[in-house]
Image (tube, rainbow, N blue to C red; front, side):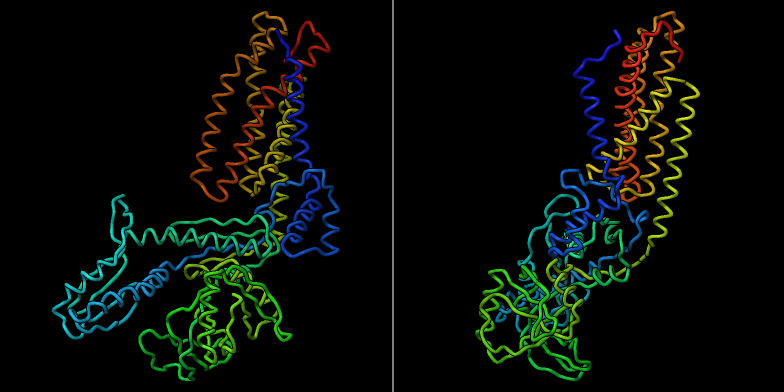
Length: 553
């Protein structure tokens, strides 16, 4: 019998009302976006009267989730970057040298004297200067320092490879270890980039790995590629080194275990530093812009382990110079006046207020594990984004009107029911997009347009089935009931296959493809709901009210 239980009717109307409530903020997009942005700024940087006014412009008791606009709709900056993985290999071998030196030095009576020739291209080259005939013994000593790692085939492997070239031992990383380093480096780089952009105050960025060593960064809003490149391209590797001496000779001779680095503030000035780090930026837990003697500076704080090492070194080296190195330049080399035991300090230099704020962000978000090169950058202006929105809006309106007219001319009153359900369908799509905080792009709009066309397919199947049942001399109630029942399997089959396609696109795709898959997948869910439940509810309510003896579809 043609009927819907009361509780089912209540649930259908509740779903419609809930979806409309979630979608409502999008009708006041500018106000709600300013409200959400103000809340984020207050949480990060504190409140101002202007931010409080933006927050008060939208009631707290109403939902504030909106569909975020992607780069192609809102404008912003896009960078395609490449991570220099070779830098990590080099850094790894520099740190490994101390272990090699100690192991070989302990066997000096057996293998004789040795000298490190170089650490280049991720390889350590050590020459046996006294007893080259002991090269095999020395290689076994170095191999004893290896650690197990997981190879590409799944079996255990060594993390280093050792070979001989005459009287020179060459120590490098194995392919299995390089693969693990690459994966870890890319994960760390993604996380550091995300933290930097979040600290910068932008909303809804797109940060995706592309290939083995590339990362795509897209930041919607009022951001230029120059600002974004400045924020991301710096490695922000901070370290503290004892100073051997200063010099003005860029070709000054340095001993093994020493570095020659330029002074960031004084052109033509250089420092010779000990290669070993007393403490590094990895031990930093916080950094904030501040003022020192009325000039912009950066306050930093170590964790307990770093603070203890920092305090012990300063206590033992009062009167000595101590270099603060950032990305291969000495930004400050103060003289230790007293022991610094509080685990914190201040970096001073020729900073502007903006530079001190950016440096604090870089240090707080962490150093990139490797250098980053910008391969491609693109600015998308707000005007271009507005043009894209208008084009997408026109496409949706044209598709919407065409479908509404077709359904009404083809099915009359039943077509009108389907049209109302189609409007509800679009509202529910935007409600779900707002609920999950999805980012809408041009391909996403294409998914919505496609959903509008697909949404009436189920209704066409149902109405055509009802027409066939009417031709079999069945009554109106029975024809409507059989029409919904017998069309259900075809509706489910067609939409499940399309939903699986959308799921595959989301899992395998990236960027715009995922945007299309999200709107298509959500559109399938809402269109099935509106076709099976909403239009049927309208038909049943109309039938109960009019009790027609005959119907025309």
